[in-house]
Length: 65
Image 1 (cartoon, rainbow, N blue to C red):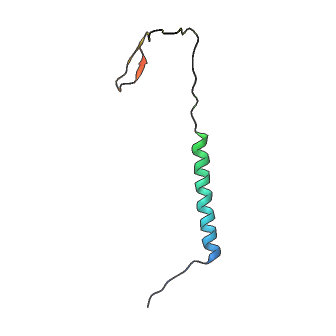
Image 2: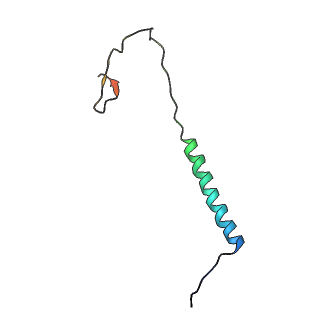
């Protein structure tokens, strides 16, 4: 004989609501971690060469020090 337990409809709705709530909280938290990009234009002229910039160890361009 097999002992099977079934969840009631109200229990399933509570589980679904808890799951949906946690998903929505996760989405809101990831949206709150957006990045801020600052562009600097002071002292930059058109067609100016990239003076003082060199390739870093990972290939990205970094300021030369």
